[in-house]
Image 1: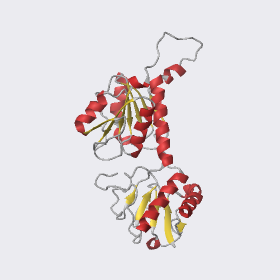
Image 2: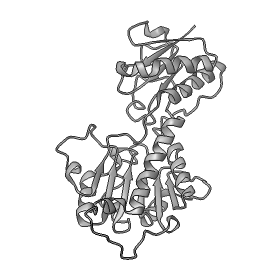
Image 3: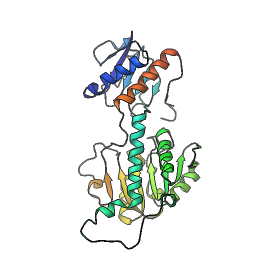
Image 4: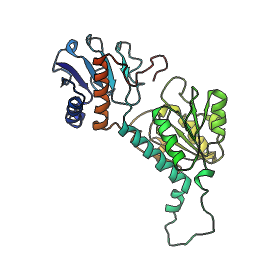
Length: 313
């Protein structure tokens, strides 16, 4: 019988126990799941992993065939020198749908000017004939066209928005103007009335949105960041907000989480803070991805969502 280690926080085990076992049965796997300390590390075949779990040294897991991350992001594990096993990131239907719903909800909020509307519930009828443009006349830019970014871009296209996507390597997505490279990045920012960032955390993306690049956006642009907190230079964003260069920012991820109570984002009138809720792994759908990758590993088939160590994602 195969041995699988559940290396997440112990309090998450009740959410995953039934889901993993059901997914293993559905995939035809003869596997038993253990938590750290219950069996010898060198008897484990696969590690179901979370960076917030107890396993940080992979050296004892000499038999493990793969480490299956429960998070979409792998920046907290990809550089671990003890990790010699193949590493797979999490791409599951529940996580993807959560990201799509978060992004489309906040894009529509900005597009329709709902913040201003809700702030005027004071008994005064304000109808001067002005209405929001149609979605086809609103330019939305998505930075990052991996599985999550591409899904968000496609959902925005379906709503009628003029969507541009940017990625490090050139992509082709129906209905999306896809750009790449340094020139493409500057071009994308120049048309971003609403900017959505779903980029990974890599050395190349750290502080990608800084004083110089924020200045390239149309004045008053809105930013939505459910990707990685390191993408944005916090001080530069605050300065751009104060100057009116950026109209509003909705931020779901931060350099330090939970976001410290004294951080200026909390009190800024043009910042919306959400507590890293855009794309949570759902136990049921994540377990299905884990089971499929174990099935593939046992069958000698290519693993899904294998991480490129050189790129960091």
